[in-house]
Image (cartoon, rainbow, N blue to C red):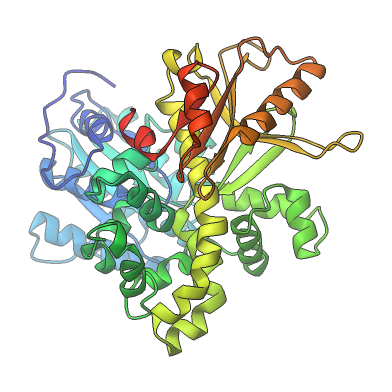
Length: 491
C-alpha cells in the first residue's frame, strides 16, 4: 500500500490507541487503485469494535457488526444496514455473499473507503466459503481494471478462526493489526487511579480492558484505597450488574468442539496457582494428555498465556491472561449461589482470602515481570532486558525447589541470553535478608549447572515493604528493590 494518505482526525473519546488509530487510518485512506483486505484481531474487550466504528464514522465508511445467526438473517441485516448507509429507498435482496460483496465493494468506486465486517468469525461459521468469496470478489475487481479502492477490514476476537484465515490462501491480507491489551500503566490512567496499591488491586480484578471500564459497573470507581472492598461488593459481586456475569461468558462464547467444563476447571486450577500441564492434570485427576489441548485452545482465544521457564529449556508455565477470568474462577464461581442470596459484604469477607492469597499474589508477580520487560533499563539491570519469565529449579539431592518469579535475560543469538537478574515477588510479605539469601542460593545453584551468573543481580519485589537491612543492602548496590510506587512511577 502507498503512503500518500488523507489525515483522519482521531476521536476525542478514544483512550490511547494512537498507534493503532494511525495504522488503521493509513490503510483506510491509502489512495492506490485496487481493493485491499485487512485483518484486525485481538482478545475480546479491547475496543476493536469501537476503533473500527469510529474509523468508519470519521471516513464515511461502512461498518457492519455481525451476530450469531443463520446466513439468510445476516444477509438481511447487512442489506438493511447497506440501505441505511446509502439512503436507498428500497432494501436490496441479495441471493448470497457474492451479490452482497459486489455491492459493498462498489461503495469505493470513487475514493478509498473502509468497509468493515466486524465479528467476521461469526459470519464464517454461518458461511464457511466467505473468506474465499472476499478474496475472489477483490481479485475480480483487480483483474477487470474497474476503478475501486475498497479497504475491506475483517475483524474478530475468535483468535483460532482469525489465525487460520490470516494463514490461508483464501484470505491473503494486505494489512494486519492486533489490538492487544493495554498495559497496567495505561490501565491506571484508564480508571483514573493514582494510588499504585489501589491500581494493582483494581487491575487484579478488571484488568485493563476498556470494555470493563465502560461497563455499567465501570461508571463506579473506587474513590480511594479504603473504598476498594465496598467497590467490589457494589459492582463486581453484584448479580444485578453485567460485570458479575461477564467472565463466565468468556469461555462460553468460544466455538464448539472442546470440553468447556474441563476448560473452566483448568482456569480454576490456574487461578489456584497450578501453572504447568502436569500440575494441572494432577489437580484435576485427569490424564496428562488432555490438558495441553485445553491450554492451547484457551491460548488461541487470548484467555491464557504461555511463558517459557527461564531455567529449563522446553518447560512452560501458563497463566490467565484476562484478570477478570481469574477473579471469577477464584472468587465468584465458588460463591455464586451465596452471592445471589446473601449480602455481598458477608461473602466477600470469606472470598477475600482467596483473592489475596492466589489472584493478587500471582497478578503482582505478572505486573513485576511486565515492569521488568517494559520499564527495566540498562541502569536497572546492566543491559537491556530481552526476555522476562518465571523459572523453577526442581529439587535435587534433598534440596527444596528454587524459584524466581522474575528472571531477566539479555540479548543473545541462538541461545539463552545472559542472566541479568533473578527476583522474588510477594504481595503480602515484608521481605528481609532471608529472602535475599534464598535468591543467592538460587544463583549459586544456577552457577553449579553452568549458568554464567557473573552479571546476575538479585531483585526483590514487594507490595508490603522491605526491612531496614534490605534497604541498607540496596544502598550498597547489592540488590534491586521494587515497590508499587517504583512499578508505576519509576522511583
